[in-house]
Length: 366
Image 1 (cartoon, rainbow, N blue to C red):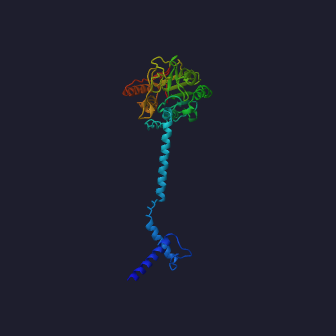
Image 2: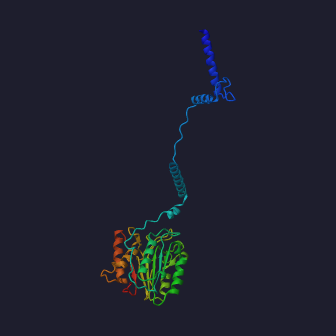
Image 3: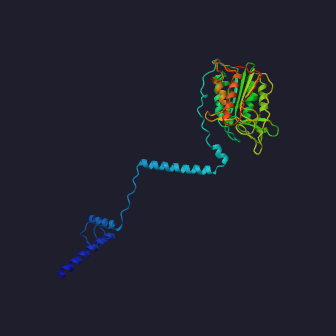
């Protein structure tokens, strides 16, 4: 019995020694060092078993499809881009952030789509249309470009050839841009049979020193009006000097310095009832202005237009022709615009009264 126990002990010891030799990488030539009868295949199986017992299994790698990896990559890119944009915006000065802010959405107005008011094209008629919304140095004038773009279509519908209409908006409406078309292009092209339209939508400004009224071009500066803005008196002078038979001016601006479509130098007090916007007495110059000198000119957000411009367009479209004659005269347009603007301004708890200066109020516009 003792003999059998001893023999079994020897056998188990030998087997254990062989197993340990396998785990330690012992043996060469394809066999265990301690047991030449064990082939290499079994040695590999024994080593795998030991390795499995020695270390816990690694967690399975997450399974990503190509689509999910692509989606995750795109989301990470969007997140990084958003973080970068937020960082850059946080570093911008307040003024730059305001300028980069999206413009108010322009509404689809009931006056934007029109047909022809007349089939006859007046080849000698001209129009200079200016609309400045975003300025280089002063706050925005909301909807001014929309005003000008729509007014251009109306002048063409009234018979002005498209090639005779100049539209100045944004950085094209500089002081130099105004001057070259008012003082060189129009005098060179206008004839004695011409009707000339000048339309302006944007900021006006008063000079506190001498009460002079100015149109503020895209590059204008309310603190340096004499060198950067265009005097209203000069505008009237240059237009009155044209050899045209009629000149019609429409100004959707104001010159009180009290807000709306008017600006004033920083630190200056708004002027009331003293700004000089006098129209020269001239038989062929007509001026239709959005408000009197001490008022502000407002907008109608729902229509995406200046209040004055909206009712001018609505009147030309037919509201100023209640008898449906197919014609709109200057005095009929003014009567409709004055009543409509005053009523709409009162709903905003303010006053705005358009003005007409004309030696020929019965003039037919079309």
